[in-house]
Amino acid sequence: MVVALTKLEDRRQYDFVDAKCGQEAVHWFASYLPFILFLQAVILVIVDNFWLKFPKTSSTLDHFVKFVLECFNSPGTYLDVSNVLWGTRISEDAESNATEDIEQGTGERGTFLPNRTEEDTLPVQIPSTQSDRDSTSDLELSEAIKAKTLCEKIRHFRIDVDHQNHRFLVVIYLAQAVVQWSFSLACFIFNICHQSCVSSTVECEIDDVIYGHYNYFKCSYAIAVYFCITLNIFHLLIATYLVLCGFMCIWTVYMWKFKTPFTFEDVRRFDPEALEQGDIDPAQGDFAFMLHLLNEYNKLYLYRFAVFLSQKNEKNLKHFILSKKWPLDKLERRSTENGTKLELEGLPGIPKAIFRLSKLESLTLKDCTLTEEDFVSMAWQTLELRSLSLVECRLKSIPTAIFQIKSLETLDLSLNRITSVPKNIADLHHLQTLNIAGNKVTKGLEHIVEIEGFTKLVVDDTVDSLMSREIKNKLEGVIQRVMIIRYSR
Image (cartoon, rainbow, N blue to C red; front, side, top):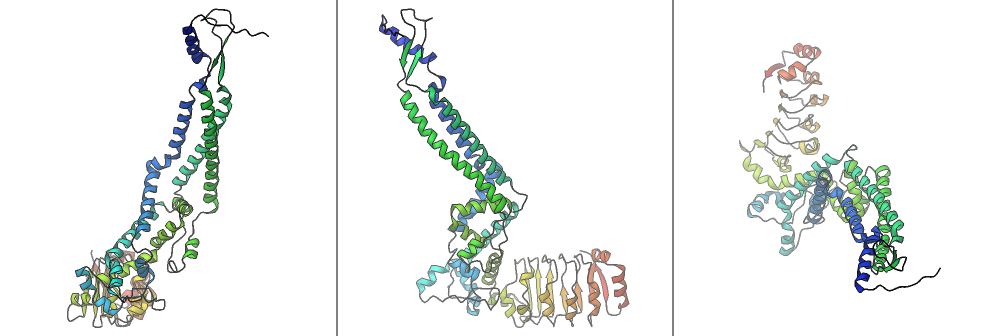
C-alpha cells in the first residue's frame, strides 16, 4: 500500500481538521480522563468516610473518641489517680484535717489513701518537701471528682453499646469495606480496559467535511503522554487501596467471629498492678469492636482507658471522695445528742469515718445510693448501734454486715427494694422493731418470730398482701410478742 502525503491549501484548514478530529476521532475515555479519575477518587473518599458521617455511627464514634482522649489526657491517670485507685487507707490525721483543706483549697499529699482491705494496703510515701506536696495536692478532691465523673460517663456509654445484639457499627464498617473493595476493583478493571484508548496519535476520517486527494488524516494528541503517566500512577494507588480494603474486610470478619468478646488480658499483662483490683467484664458487640480498633491504633490509649473502665476503681474513687468530703471532725460536728445520733441524706455511699465514732448509737441514712459493697462486716462490727435506719437507699437485699451489730434494737429498712428476709436476722438477739414498709418482701418473714424479745413489725398494705396465709398464721400464733402495724406510704 502506497501512502501519499498531501498538503492542504490553507493553514486554517489544518486548525479546522485538528479541532474536528479532537471532537470525533479522540476516544471519549481519553477526552474525559481527568474528570473520570476525579469522580472515582471523590466516590472513594465519600465511601471511606460514610460511617464517620452517618448519624447513628458517627455519634457513637465521637463519644468513644472523646472519652478515650479524656482518659488519656486526664491529669494523674498513672500518678495521683493510681494512688487513689490502688492505694491505701487515709490516715487519721489526714481525715481530721480534710475539712480545713477543702475550705482552703489545699491539701497535703502526706496521706494514706483508702483501699478495700487492710491486708492489701500499699503505703504511699510521705513527701519530704513542700514542692513535692504542691505537685500532687491538686488531685486531692477536684481531680478525683473529675475522674469519678468520667468513670460514670464511660459506664453509661458501655451500657448503651455493650451487648451482643448491638452490632450496627460492625455491620456498617464491614459493609463499607466491602463497598470500597468492590468499587476499587471495578475502577481498576474499567481503567485497565480503556487504557489502550489513550494514544498519542489518532486517525481521523472526515471526508464529508473536507474534500481532496486524501483518504484520512493522522492527528497528534500530545497530552496523551501525560494522561498515560497519570493513569499508571492512579492504577498503582488504587491497587494498593484495593489490597487495604481486602485486608479490612478479612480483619473485620476475623475480629467479629473469633475475637469477640474483647478481653483485657493484654492490659493486665502490661500493668498487673493497675487492674489487680479491677473487674472489667469482657466487652461485646460494637463496644468490643471499637476496643479492637483502639488496640490496633495505640495500645497506650487502651491501657489508660481500661483504668477508668473498671467498676472497682470507680468505687474506690467514690470512697476516696466520701472520705475527703466527710472526715471525722465534720461527722462529729454533724452528730447530735452528745455524739450518739447521726443523720445523713443523699450520699452515694457510707463515709469510712462513721466507723470511728465511738459514741454513736443511732445512725440514719436517707435517700442514699448503697450497695452490698458499702457494708464491710469487719467495719460494722466495731459499731455499738442500737438503732439503724436505711430509708430509701435502693437496697435490693438486707446486707449481711448488719447482722454483725449484736446490740441493734431497731432496724428501719423502709422504702427499699428488698424481697426477702434472710435467716441470719435471727442473729440480732436484741432486735425489737423491724420496719420493712415500702418493700416487696415475699420470703423469709418466718425467721422474724425466732427472735426473742421482738415486739413490732412494721409493714404496709403491699407487704401485707404479698404475705402468704402460712406466714400470717405463724405471726398470729405469736401475736403476744409480735404486733403488725399497717403503714401507708
